[in-house]
Length: 355
Length: 87
Image (cartoon, rainbow over all chains, first blue to last red; front, side):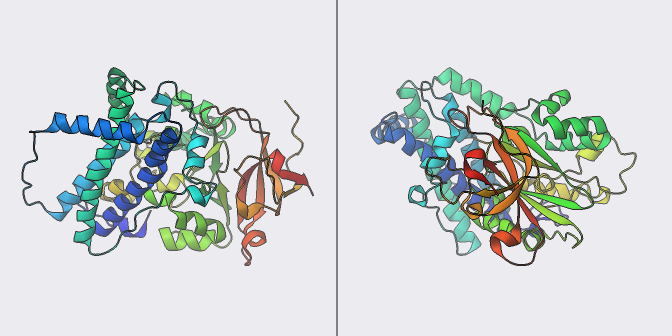
């Protein structure tokens, strides 16, 4: 896990880490997941900028009179929690208007990758740079989130006005999205630790094997499971975009989508996981970095921590961290259970993903 | 469907350029040599891209062959057949 988020306290102790995670994720979702899609549809005249403008005006008319109440004085911790909630709303809102929900639009993920410049810097949408005092950064994020949400609302309304999305479908999708439970990665790993047959089936057949656990295998690509052993430590990256079996395991932490992680981990894997995550891999062990460049989406099957004999599958699942599924951390030790996990979640918890 | 041209253990070289090829071969392995460690075949993935890509392989490279240094760590990269040549 990240060095700066692993302190054992149940309340937020490192504002900087939380704010940074919101900044990184917000810009990622805006540029890579949302605005690139608007541009794609605008280029093809499916949703024009004028549609967005019209939709925005009609939304404003509806809102008139409701007015915002004056904000009470709130603590920094509450403001940051509110930012994290707004970011979640924004990410879920993007998921609601994802391409496969838009009627008659033939758009595949690869189109979006091209549009947002994964293969050609010319098409990159510039991410906002952050800096300054913590106060200032929080204020800026509050403003950005309000603005970004306005555009998302207008886009959603424009899709409805253009007849590309039906309101009942939208509501149905919203319910499904909010009902979606936590991540399944931990359950998959825990079963593999206790059941050798399941483990070999998981490694051989990937997605198909997880059906046994009642987990839907998801839809994108093939699942590659790479097992950590005494001699090999596996790490996952996607240098071209940020591929990961999201549909199955939940979303990755913010740093997985960062260019600096992608660049460093391939050039200097050992030093990178030591410096970024405080994980020392013995010199005798090989580090194997898997770059998800195509249709195989990888997960790491971490090693079972020592001292866990006799633990139930449910207890074992609690030891599995998001980081350990990427190879950027080990699983928790049984003694670390409890408070640590609570502080880790706000920063590293999987988000519901648009695609 | 075409038969897979390579087997696990084959040494291969990644083409430097391949204008007709799909764009999912990262720049840092182009022109480099590696060893096939897995044969995935053709993967149907209509949500991700249109049509079918050629057979897919995992190719293992040494980090030091790509970026210098003395590390014995490895990079495993998935590459389509159209990008690979026999060594």
